[in-house]
Length: 243
Image (cartoon, rainbow, N blue to C red; front, side, top):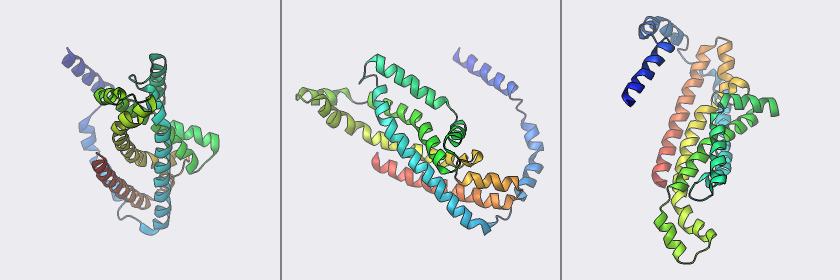
């Protein structure tokens, strides 16, 4: 039954999106022409690239940190094994609502609230991160080994001591791993915040595209690729060490 439902959904999606692979094949010359306008990359904008790349990293790092700090207590409240239903159910619903808001809409909202620049970008990244990191934190709390908790509890430890010695040592490595993974995603997300004036390298990409300066866009895209690749590698090594 599940297979039939899945195939039906796939067929409806194929028809509803007007997916036509042959049309894509026929458009390859136009794609090649567009990419040809980006060659060779114009590296005369290296000062802009350096400044915008640093700003993008700063937005992602600070936004991720704020999101992690806010999501940790929310994850605790959302854990079904640590709080009663009247607390963890509403908290989980709230985190789901946060995850449902598109990042670009958050960025636009904060631009209207506090003005242009990297500050609204940080707020958007932080708010958007809370929903997912809060969910991960809750799952980490819920997946703790109850035998370890019972062992510490059997020594007569207080609730605070149980949290410190039985629960936190189990969840901290997972939460750090989640935070590093979220940082990778946030760096990618931060590159598009410039579309609505929320700072970062995306602002200059939009600016150069509007001016049909595709060779400069190519330079920025290559820098984004290198930056994301480097962060992915560093985060992978850190997660491996933490794990």
